[in-house]
Image 1 (tube, one colour):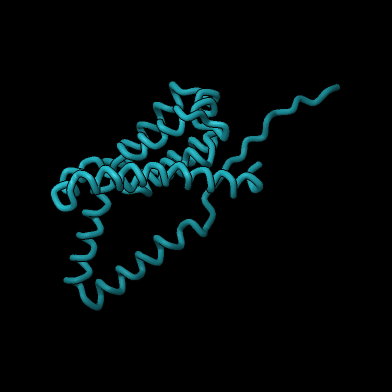
Image 2: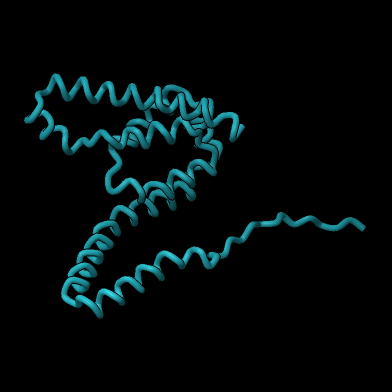
Length: 177
């Protein structure tokens, strides 16, 4: 008789290490509440504001991840953003980096998800590098530095992102490939 081989799916449970940092923070807040309650309360209030501030972009990233999982096939991602990505895919990655908003760390889960689906290191590096270009700040930059400077800086940033992406892909090829 032939045994049926079920694909073993790796189930990851959080280890105890995951809870060390939050536990340390709780202990620090507890000590501060005893020693300096007013400042501890102000710090807790500020921390709450930061957490509330990152919720909208984080929610947006999770919605994008959900949409990608529902509507985009891994083969499409590999075709556009894979290790042999075309110019179109690299430009798409650069444009996505430029128009993305919010803190960079909320984009890391999406980049990891895309990487697991086949996106290449070059496309991810180009995306992350182009996060430095902020469309909503360009008018203010133009007011301070002039449009010639801003256009040159922006074009050079995008070109440098592609060079950086090529270097990342080249140096990580031996590790991943």
